[in-house]
Amino acid sequence: MKRCMINITALFLILNHSFVNAETKVLFIGNSFTFGYGSATKHYRTNSVTDLNSEGIGGVPALFKSFTEQVGLHYDVYLETHGGSDLDYHLNNKLDVIGSQPWDQVVMHSYSTMDKEQPGAPNALVKSTAKMSEFLYGLNSKVEVYITATWSRPDLIYKADRQWSGTPIEKMALDVRAGYDLAAQSPYVTAVNAVGEAWTQAMKLGIADTNPYDGIAFGKISLWTWDYYHGSSYGYYLHALMAFGNLTGLDPRSLGEYECSGFELGMSQRQIKMLQQAAFDQLIKEKRVTPSSPPNSKKPLHQKNCATI
View 1 (cartoon, rainbow, N blue to C red):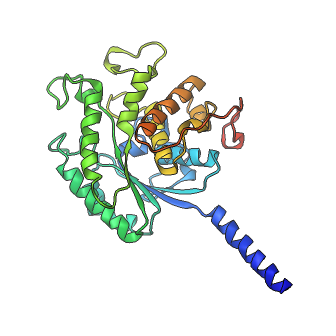
View 2: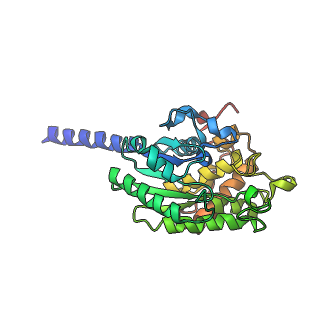
View 3: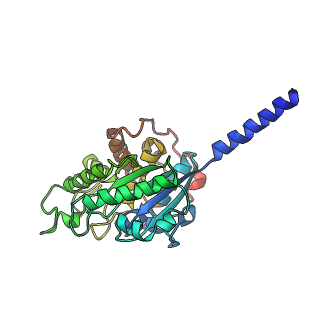
């Protein structure tokens, strides 16, 4: 009887250890908005994630991986990206790669205007989201699929004769979100990852400038890079914070103002804190996270994951 109890206890410890150390497999599917074109994030910590296309990309997936490590979570992060692509591209060309294994969570998005030929039209997005999410469900019936509604583009707002010319900076993000809300009606989609609206939150908080064409106001940042289309490191950082909140359910402010990746990318404590707040404001609006107190430590919580301080 005693030997039997010892064996049961040993088995419990083995199973418990396996459970605690089990890694959640996450796949990011997207384009330059995921791989971080125009910023230092593109090749950030490339050895921490698996690029299924073997192009040496870190990007938003590597930032997400860094955040999860800093809070002690175990995520195995993969990415499959192609510049200028919509979801149809991945459906037509990359299903063999995407279907190489089942995924626990997937974050994906289409072209920045939803439809290349008809900017603002959601039909193509809705159809391709339904097809891809159903394919992912076929690999794992418990998969969580998050679709990322992207940001407003100044090049389509402040220039003449463009789809959103002359509209408020938040309008394009809201239109894109409306399209993704339609796509989210697929039974295989878990939620919308509202990155574009989080960018708008950063502008409302006063940390991010609204119009890069007239210069960046003192004390503010630009969420866009030099082409006023793609993101800057700040923009992709906020993108990754939203993925972190949605996939883990954790308050991004729990990373604290001494968060490692922001430090490594040259951000100030104030900038890090404000971008975390912008992500939180959008996530709590969506009821995706539970508020938590920021860490009290005046040093990085996981200094071993940071560059030399």
